[in-house]
Length: 300
Image (cartoon, rainbow, N blue to C red; front, side, top):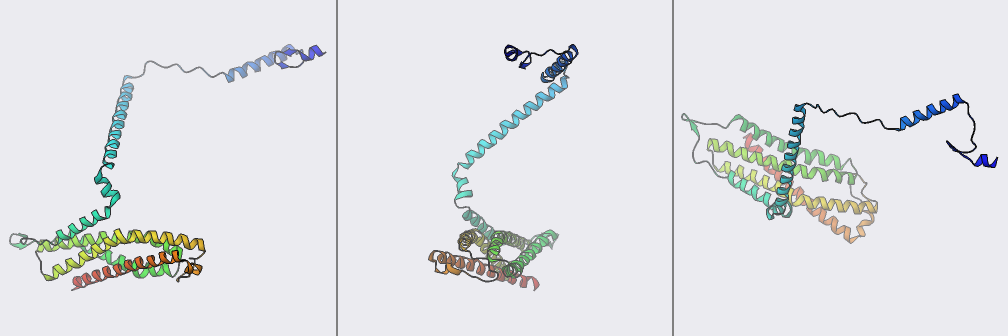
């Protein structure tokens, strides 16, 4: 018995049992099927009679891919060399605000140059095109509407209906867009106003006064966007982080600094924030006065 029990059969360990011929045939059949299932099918024969046109298309596609790859690599290499140049660093990293302001001053100076003579056709003065008038009025009206909405509707409504930190988060998003949009609209208004008077050659005291007001509005809004808004946003971020750590800032419509009043570091940041915010508010009021002055000129 021990010898029989320890004998290794063909299909595993254990005693060798006698099975009927039918069972043995069935077992052999199942074992063959299992072996056939585990054996991967032979690969399909590759047809050698591939069409010539398909081979040509494949070669053309490979060539185009190689050319595209080389072009992209060359462009990337050129862009990397440009990024290392001093001009790129000055324009995009060092002081881009100064470059933008220089271009803005150039634009203002160009708009102050009067026409040498009246533009006439067959003895009649050429009036500015309807498109010029449309762009001028559309830009100016949009500018006035944005100023009115941001100052009297959006700002006051959000301040008296949102928690102070939520209101600060909204202002961080709106301030850059607001002054960027106003700067663009002021520039368009200034350019189109100059075109209208160049075409008619109307250069008197009132014209120069309006150009001065529009230029002041444009430069002031652009200066606020480039030089005042970025530090204001940083102060809001630091101030909000300190207030959240102290558990204040959830009040609506008023200030409650709580125990932060005794923190000299926070109070210094708070005073800086109030001063920068006051500069933004004064600049916004001055630009609104400029647009109101030009609106009175249009109405007259």
